[in-house]
Image (cartoon, rainbow, N blue to C red; front, top):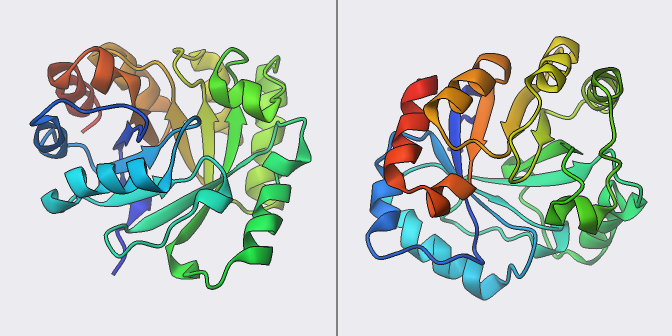
Length: 230
């Protein structure tokens, strides 16, 4: 039975390329967050991903792997879902559908019940994901709303993810996305480092994702962001 990701208000994103201090995995898992997402853009390997899984899987929280590219996908019995991104505002079609085709062309078997497609709209040009995918980040609220409608109404992605990746986003842009979305669950991620920011984006998006704050600010800030949206 897979976890019901549609009901999550707060997700904590952990990067396999970063080290957690001793005891941190338990503190994160008991912070009140709804799920853990294992995801990173750079230097993610099967080895460091499995090492992180070893650290966090004993605590019973829903676990999501979000591969940097679909060819890094794993179907491990410890994870609940595989969230597979398509960067819909990428200028390189490989990040929209090309890598996905390559993945399926060479895959032995896919557990489709675990796969949840995500339409990513990347809005920080200085982020690793922005640079790697060649995302067009100079978008107005109207532009973002149009991308959301294409993803939601036309392609029927179950998740639309507004990604500022390390920088706190413009609430008016996220509001434009929220106003445009009809069926998909709206995720927001990027630069949430306080309860106030968590509450602000939590009022607009269905689910907020907190990542860098875990490493830079510590467990107390993570707990504060959880309380702000639950």
